Image (cartoon, rainbow, N blue to C red; front, top):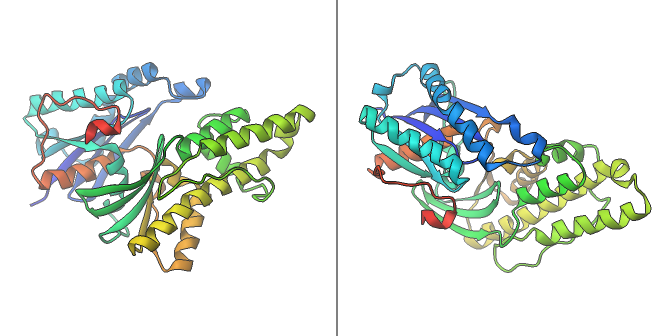
Amino acid sequence: MDITILGIESSCDDTSAAVLRNNVLLSNVIASQAVHVKYGGVIPELASRAHQQNIIPVVDTALREAGVTASQIDAIAFTRGPGLVGSLLVGVSFAKGLSIARNIPMVEVNHLQGHILSHFVDLPDRQLPHPDFPFLCLLVSGGHTQIVRVDSPLEMRIIGTTIDDAAGEAFDKCAKVMGLPYPGGPVIDKLAREGDREAFRFARPRVEGYDYSFSGLKTSFLYTLRDAVAGDPDFIERRKADLCASLQHTIVEILLDKLVRASKQTGIRDIAIAGGVSANSGLRDGIVEAGRRRGWRTFLPEFKFTTDNAAMIAMAGYYRYRQGEFSSLDVSPAARLEELA
C-alpha cells in the first residue's frame, strides 16, 4: 500500500513543505528569507516571524503541486530539531494543528538524519543512486560537521564530530572578515575557482580519532589577514581569489582526511556527503577523486537536496512511519542535538 507523507521543515531560515509517496517526491516547495542578508547572518526573531508568514502558503502550494489533498496524507513529518527554537516552534505548532484538525498522525524527525536520508529520495521521472547499508556519511550542515555510520534508515551512529567550530562556520566567518556577502560559503566557492589554492598555508588541526576542529584554521586565517593588511590595505581585494582557494582547499583536505581514515578502519566503501556544504564544488570534486583512487562508491546529493528542505524530512518520516514511531501532541521543539537523544 502506498504511503503519502507531508514533510515540514522550519529549523532555520527556510520554510519548506514537501509531499512524498513512498520514496518518490511529488513536490518540494521552499520559501527562503532574504531579510537576513543585510545583517550578515540569520536573526532568530526575524526568522520565526517569516516562518509564520510563509508556512500556510508553502504547505498549500506543496499539496497542490503534488495533486493531493490533506485527507490523502497518511502522516505529517516535521523537524523537531536541532535548530532555532523559534523557527522550529512554527513548524511543530503547524504540524500539531493540522494533525488535530484532520486526525493525521505526526512523525518527528531529526533534521541531521533527514539530510543523510535525502540520498533515498527518488524523482517521478528517475530513480537516483542510493548507497547500500552500511555506509559512511560526511554530514556538513550549518553548525554541524560529523562522520556518521549508517547501518539502516533508523540506525545511525556519530563516530566523529566537531569539537568547536564547524566547517560551514569557518567558511562564513572567514568570508565575513573579507567583506564578502552572506552567506559566505557559496561566494568563497565561486571565487576559489579563480585562485591559486597553494598561495597560502593555514593551520591544520591535530585531533585524535575522527573528530574535527576548525577554530585553529579560522584563527590562522584571521592572523594572515591582519599581518598582511597592516602593510598593504588593499591586500584582501587583490588576493581575494587566492585566499578563498587556499581556504577552501584546506577545509576540504581536513574533511577528507578523517573520512578516508574512517573508511580504512571500518572497511566501509559506500561513502556519501550531505548538508549545505555538500554543495561546495571543492568538496564534491575532492570526494569523487578520493573515491576514484580508493575504490569507493561515492554518493553526492542533488543540489536541490543540499539546502534545508522538506523532501528529506518526509523521507525520514516515511521510515519512521513504517516502524510505527509516532509523536504525541505534547512534543516540543529541541534546539540542541543532545535534546533529541
